[in-house]
Length: 337
Image (cartoon, rainbow, N blue to C red; front, side, top):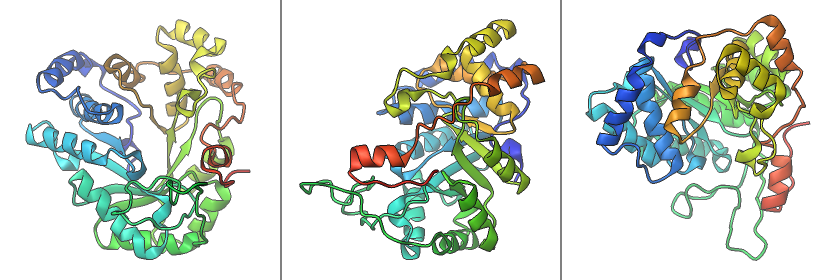
């Protein structure tokens, strides 16, 4: 699998002016008026990737609750002749309630049905957390609670060896439902465990990675195995996790580098992640910011500047189940040290 299937390390900036034409075209067809922020974001991204790069990465998951809307956006793009299925790189994720081997294929097929696809490019185990099965007809997506209508709803943790789940994931590749499989939110020991028995090796490690949580050892280990690393929440902005007081773009170092290079603070943060050899997948529902986020390839940060960015590392994790599962779902569940 080529790294540039996810995010190019170089770009043709000469094509960048096509964005304004694209925005007008999208508005004309009503493709920027999605029912949710997420659906609008994904639909927008399809067209940005097509006209600028000729390939795209759509990061989906059953737990996001919008795969039907994403599928509708994909169909519109294909029907309009703007994109072919083989141009797209579409990822989805196995939710925690479907880790038991007998449910893995059905969960994947449900995502495929909602997305209107016959195969996924990548399917990830979303978390190394196994929860009691919730039937599709009972609630979908099932989220974290087993039964939210009880007096004291809780998560129902169950013991499912990751090896059993991974074997079922491998079957998806053999059945032609997915091209690649990988891991999300796994630490080094979890990755090492899967690597030791996997017949179909994980292709991708999908982790929280930003200036406040740089995870250099995990990144180095994953890359040494030949995995591609996708960095989610690359902006280091706590707003997505109910903490708007923390944001890497407000750091003096970031502001200094942005002024020096004549770019935005967000572009500095994203370029930092990209120069580490990672795909960065920021999210936004603002067209101008989406445009700006893509234009990070017209400059390079020096070794000295990269070292300055490294100094921002606080080992600060926003997406930590040990915190929010206990606070919001009445269940302590830790997967990180």
